[in-house]
Length: 65
Image (cartoon, rainbow, N blue to C red):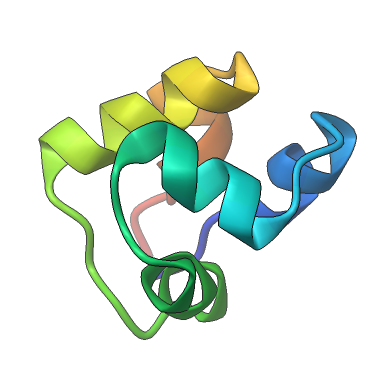
């Protein structure tokens, strides 16, 4: 999954651990999401968006190929 979670996290001045703590998951899960190796639920996507003050489109939208 292509996403901009890492960029948004860094812009929000959060470590992976801080973001994980805010959304209630492990740091390892954040790492996997950032690498595109874990497909988060819609609920988790929204929690991440709220934590970094971005929209779903800004973080997770991918144009149809």
